[in-house]
Figure 1: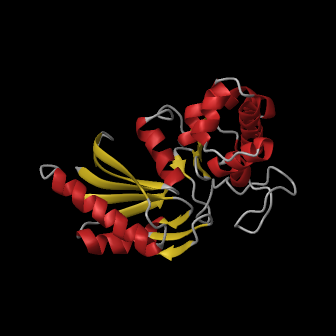
Figure 2: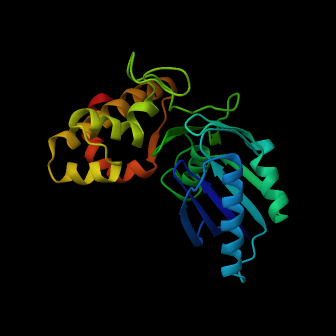
Amino acid sequence: MIALCFDVGGSKYVAGLVDGEGNVLCAERREWEALTPEGVVSSLVEAGTQLMGAHPSLRPEVIGVTIPGLAKAEEGLWVEASFSGIRNLPIGRLLREAFGLPVYGENDAKACALAEKLFGAARDTDDFLYITVSNGVGGAVFADGRLVYGSGAAGECGHVTVEEGGRPCKCGKRGCLEMHAAGPGMSQTYEELTGERVGGDQIAERARQGEAAAQRVFELEGEYLGRMLGMAVNLLSPALVVIGGGLSLAFDLYEASLWRSL
């Protein structure tokens, strides 16, 4: 079976064709032109149509879409992502109408946890915590071999408070992990230290070159993630923690401080 897949992110999206063994047959990454309900749907439809047109021998039978923030998977509903302003978007129904294929949607962190269980680092354990750190911070819990939903948002750790009286978040709180440890939060920290605003990739590059301010940003990154993981590990006692997302690629820069904090 081949699936037409969409990974919806905060700054970009990826369209791809994937087989039942988890092999990515082809994929294309694009930046958002407009992160609005209409812009998201029209961009995905355009990307999917062009991808299938370029690979006519790869005929998808199903569509999968992962979204940031809160989702109602059974309804194909994107409930919200606080950073985007999107609310209650019936993305499953709209993609089904556009392509005439069944659509399955899921929160991105939960989908990543499923992928780690099926194909990745968690194949040999039934109890683990997955967190993703990129433009935002999300998470998922696997317990006794099953993905835990709770009332729908189990594992969503981005709005755990890690800094009392910290930065205001669009969720209405202050000091959320997402505001301090996600990419934009790291950029804000670097700006506070240096007066210059740069992205996470540049901060990582400067940290590896020995710049003290950039290294301090990653030290704080590990500290904040360690605080949240300490709470989660005490509560859930997972056998394994898997860290994914774009900032996992810089894990070497904050591993030591994460372990100290944890």
